[in-house]
Length: 57
Image (cartoon, rainbow, N blue to C red; front, side):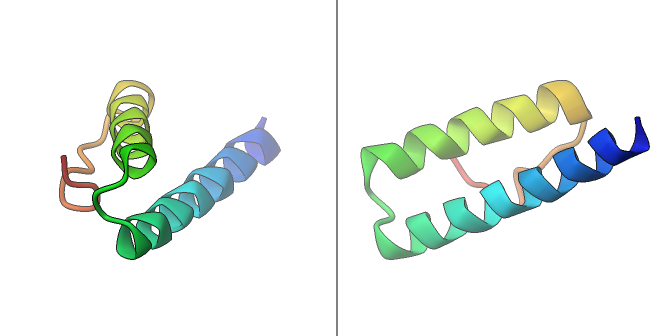
């Protein structure tokens, strides 16, 4: 159970890092905007945290 939580946390952090890089390279791309909305909604739903300071709409 703890291994799954740790792996999920690491995957989430890596996805945020990739998303940050994608948005830095192409901030107006459709893919970057869609991914940021998906990641933000999933984080708020499942982790019950507000990540609006990390990912902007």
